Length: 417
Image (cartoon, rainbow, N blue to C red; front, side, top):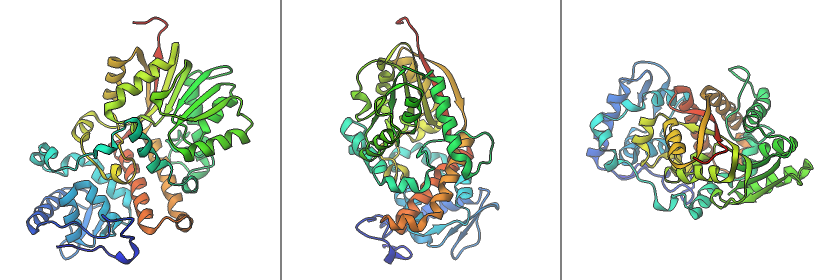
C-alpha cells in the first residue's frame, strides 16, 4: 500500500522523491509502529490528536496527526527520518512546533522501548558511505548546505551574516539585539585567543567572514579556510569593501591541507561537520598549526556522551536533508580526543546553550516572516517546511538540554611533552 501525502500537487516529485509518497510497509509493521508510538505518546506531557482515535498524551502542546497511515508507515520504515519527512509532507503538524519537539527531545530516551534501543543497529538507517568526511566527501557535504544560496541565508541572519550561536546580555532576546550579541560572541573568542596587532591567526571555517573582519580590524594577519565557494566569494567581497584585503585572505581549502605556523587558531561550530572518525585529525591540525605557547579557541555544539554513543552510527533526518556527514560530539569526547591525540590542554570551557535556543528562535521567526522572499528565490513550499522543521528541531534540542554549546580554550605549552 502506498499512501500519498496531503497536497501532493504542491510537491515536486523530482526534487522530493521521498516526500511525494509514504514508503510501502506491511500492515503488521504499521500496526506495530502505531502501538509503540501510542504507548510512548500516552506517557508524554503533550496532546496527540490522531485522526479517528481518542487523544493521546498527558496534556500539553498539540501534535496533530492528520494522516495516521502515512505517519506510521514512514516512522516504521525509517524512524526519525520518517518523522521529519512526514512533517515535510504535511501528514502531521503542530500549532507550537518548538514546544512539541522540545517535549520529544526531553524524553528521547523513552520514545523507543529498551529492547528495540539495544537493537538500533538492526533497524536504524545507516550513513551512506559517500558522505564520509574524506577530503572529497567533506567538500560535497559542505556544498550541499552552505552553497544553497547566500541570498537565502541573508533572509534570516542578521547583518553580520553570522551562522552560529550569539551571546546575549540577557534572555529572552529581541531581534535588534542579535547583531550586537554576535559581535559579543566573536569578540569573546578573539579575546580568549589573545588576538591583537600582528597576531598570525588561522580561522578554520570562514562562514561569511565576520570573525575574519573583526580579527583583521584588530590588526591581526588572518588566513581563513572554507570549503564553500559561495561563502568564499561573499567573504572576500566583504573584506575588500572594508579595506582589509592586505590583512585577511580567504582560501578554498580543507583544514587538513592547511600549512604554516600561527599564534592562534579559531574555529566556530566547525567540529560538528568533521565526522567522529576525523576528530583526531581535526585536533591534531590545531596542534600542528600552533606555535609553542599558542592558543586555539573553538565553539562547539555538544550532546550528552551516552546519547552520542547510542546514536553515532544512526543516519538521521538532519543528515539526509540539512548537514550530511555531521556528528555532534560530547564534552567527554572532545576532552579525550584532545588528551589522546594532541599536545594541547583544555584550559577553559564555557557553556551557554540557552543563548543558542534564543538565537535559533530569532532566525526561525524571521525565516517564517520572509516566506514570500524565500519563494521568490526559487525555494518551494516543501523546502520551507524542511527549514522550518530544521530550525525548530534545533531550537528544541537546546531548550530541552539535549544539546548544549561550548567555547573552549586550548593551550599549547612552550615545551613538548
